[in-house]
Amino acid sequence: MGPFCFGSSPQLLAYFGVPGLFELLIGGVLILAVVAVVVIYGAYSKFPTEGSQSQNANANDRTVAMAAQWFYQAGASNIFPDLWEAFLAPIPVAERADLLHAYYRRLTGEDEQVKLQAAKAWSVWEASTSKLLISQALTDRFKEDAFSLAFARIEAHYFVNHAFLKPNQLLNDIDKIRHIPGVIVQGRYDVVCPATSAWDLHQAWPEADFHIIPDAGHSMSEAGILDQLIEATDRFGG
Image (tube, rainbow, N blue to C red; front, side, top):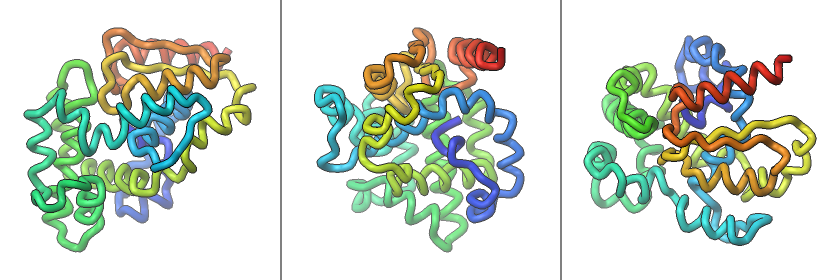
C-alpha cells in the first residue's frame, strides 16, 4: 500500500477528513505488522537528513547516494520518465527544486481543485510504479478522489516530518527490537523503496529472516511478496 499504512489511526484520518479509510486498512494490519519495520525504514531512507550517520558507514553512503529524495525528486524518474512527466505537471517549474514541499503546500492548501489535482498526480505516480508490471486496476483505484486525497496527504505529512524518526533511528536502536522475531521481505525491483534499505536493515539485524523476491516491485499484493508474508504470519501464529 505504501508507507502511510503503518501510521494510520482514527485520529490522524479524521484530521485529514477521510472517514472510512481506517476500516479499509484494518484488514491488512496483521500482514503489515510483519513488514512494518521495513516500510518505516524504507520510507525514511528516501529523505536522509543532512549529516546523518549509519552504524555502517558504507551502507549509509549507499543510502544517501541512491535514496536521497529518490522517489519524489530524482532517481525513479529515470526509470519511468513518461510517468514522471505526469507527476511534475501540477508543479510550476519554479518550484520543482523541492517537489515534496511543493506538493505538501498544495495538498494542505485551501483550493480544493488544486488539492485534488495534486493528490491524484501523487497517488497515480506511486500506483504506476509500485508493481513490477503496471497495474491499471491499481492505478484506477489510487486516482479515486477520496482515496487519492487520503493517500497523498498522509504520505506527504509523514515525509515532510521525516517519518517522525531521528536520523538513522531504526538502525541505531536496532538492539531494542533484536530479540523480536522478524521477517524482512523486499521486492528486487522495488523502485519506491529500493532494496538497499532492506539490505542495510538486514546487515544491522541479521537475526531476522531476509527474503528478496526476484520478480516483484514494491506492492504487498505481488504474488511472491504476498506468499512470504502469509508464510511468515502463519509461522508466527503457530
